[in-house]
Image (cartoon, rainbow, N blue to C red; front, side, top):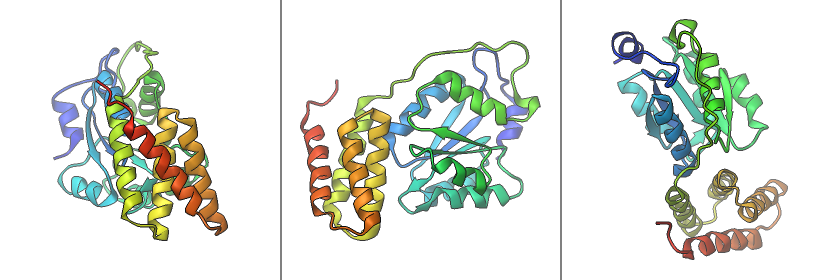
Length: 238
């Protein structure tokens, strides 16, 4: 199934819902970050599908070709930039390929890999989200006439943040091998940036720095795990 055929035969974008008719595949391991994108897709008229790792994304892509692909760089089973590079070279090519990360330095890696644009996390601006995708779409797929600029700020459900924290706690309990530590440090830092959780950002970055410098990181791991547990002990959002 090709979403371009669906676009042409079914639904067309409107000024209020400029992404109507598009399917967006988000390759993102964080439920919290993905929830923000899901809400922006719904308000823009797009359908969303999620893959939480490269292997899952590849299974999706065996079944259909999305209109837009958004790939996080830090994934549990590999580098998102490598997936971007592979799909940029594939024919037929997905019309819009975007990279995303909470690290602005990742922008260059995305663009070198062949991405059409970069979505900075945290992403809360509906207008910026729509404009980024529309600017990369072929002219014939953009809404005709004036477009409504929606300056709504998106706030994802706190329950999704809690789910990510629970996942991080499980990872920290699973072991402390090098690959796992590198992944959990970037994962926690990423979700903390999306949630604007300053203390957790600092703890995640501290673990990353210790790992990069080859320093003992037992205290950094304990600090990070403690902060995660503190947040999980707080009353669940209603």
